[in-house]
Length: 265
Image (cartoon, rainbow, N blue to C red; front, side, top):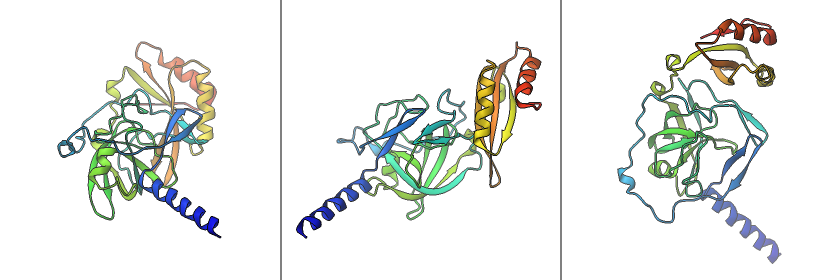
């Protein structure tokens, strides 16, 4: 009986510790992830009162981090646009274990900057994160992927989490809304045009087509998830196609595989 009580006490202590210092998966490759312990810095290296909200500004998409990826056996499809994005769920945070490491966008994670990680929003994206119980909010720049624990929708940097009182608690229910002015992609800034090969309701169909297209050596082939009402569509896109290339050649190759005429934009 005494041994049983001791086991219960130990388990309760571990559960309590996990709620204060949440764990966050790190993407090792396209096939999986693993957990690492995390927490606040031992000593604060900057005056947090001087750290302001992220300032939204137009930015190009990150060259990496916007392609489909797999974590814990689940496939994620980053969206092409964050316009109108709003969701409610649990926010968590990550700190010293990842300070100085590369994020999914290739930038270096700085726990003293107003940034965040999200599973599918375009990199970068600016969002407002508002705690539902206290109404405290921050504006952060999404430049990383995560969190991957069930129910969590955004991972805040240490300083962003501290500003809305999330450090000791570990998680809180929040509302995440996009600031759409920064999420519009300018096709004019690219060196060519894009061709949409097809659009599917099932992600596996999009994966199959993209695999076939890549075998044709026609350049970059991407999959983007697009929300239309309550439905999600998976778009297979080829490009940008250089202006000095014969566009009809690309259209013919895509049609030979997809069986349909691609849309140009």
